[in-house]
Image (cartoon, rainbow, N blue to C red; front, side, top):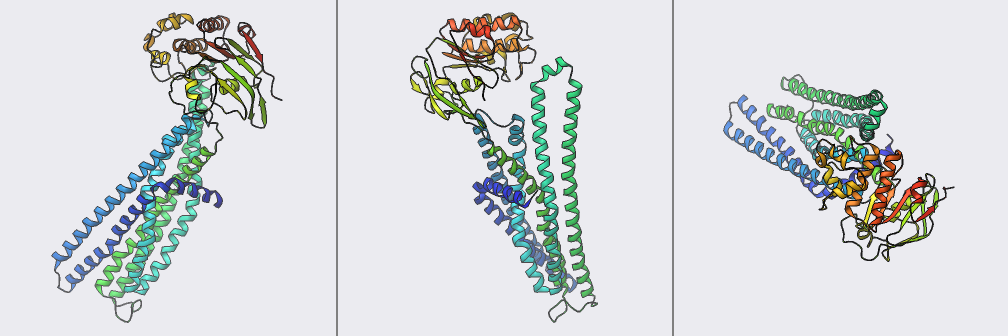
Length: 550
């Protein structure tokens, strides 16, 4: 990782944390006040022990003062941690809401596994950064400075020990922290890759079983899991190394203070004071301050890995936001149907696909007409369907539907009149009945009969109550395609957009799908079908041939 990458990650992370800065400042102040109570407690302990040595020991007052300060310190710590934790929960919740909102209203985007890993797993790593690292950083900026001043007040020698050993800890922590951050970023990337791999393999599970490729798939997944394990162990190795370095310097510093105080009280050392010998109370006070001088640095070191993980998440967040994606027209929400006949008029459509400019033909389609879009792969058939559904924005040209311009104000109402039959069937994690009806009332039998699927559904383990999974597990490709068509038949759309409805099907399945489409057209529904199937195209009212992109 370069310094520039670190600065970019820190900038993104600061932007994510910015809405909670007020709460974090309050938590930092409370945490700092709690830490600054220890010198007062240390003074009471030193006074009590020194009093015992001189037979002047009103212990009850020291004990009462120590206990009251301890209770106050615990209350402030609890209050601070609660504020920081709540702020972290709000921040991660807002980030997840942004992801869900954006992904729900755009037509293209990154791989689903990567997005799922970012939303479900990686964002949780921001919580330790907010709840632990931010308060620890605030304490480091205040507590060591106060303790250093108190140490110099009692003994310049102890102050010099703190002054020399203290800065060494953050220096080595920063050096090791860069390695930790690089390791964390590699781990975050591997988590996303593993999620993508799992999603792809689950989607292709039926094909994997048919091809007998289970062993090869398991081996590849095991190799990916092993890579993730190695990346995780690399992060842990760096974490243990940084902890060992920190504990070494902290132990050396505390030992040097204890040795100096001990030899001074024995009269073997005569330097370090300001013209008077070190008193027992001052010596005990300095020994009690020494661990607390290093404690904020130790807390920051422990939380440094939280910062490294948060920066890695911030980098993933920035990468996700930078992904080019075309938003849907409209809000992508339920809306009242757009009024008027379902006429379609396309004029002068142009859309840039990477470096190429796709030019689509003009046409008009009256309500109830059927149209086939023929052309080689990459000619723009699917793109035209997505444009007609308001899922893409044309760079040039316009689409008029039901006599109105298809734009943000009309897209939701227009989509309420559309049926969509994708090339790859997709089902919700719900019963087959819900997948076909999508909550609409009515008898599903006519739609199933129209696509010759009533016997297949009756043969499923639980009939219409069967859960198929997202990929339609247990069904052939043709059966899944026919169920998708049955869903469209039951919804009775005014226009059906079908993408390669007979692709990769045997003759019997293709004929069943074709018959179902014609049955839907007979009800007055307009059909716009993107296909390579010349026989299916010949049964449509009109055919438009798209030329391949140059």
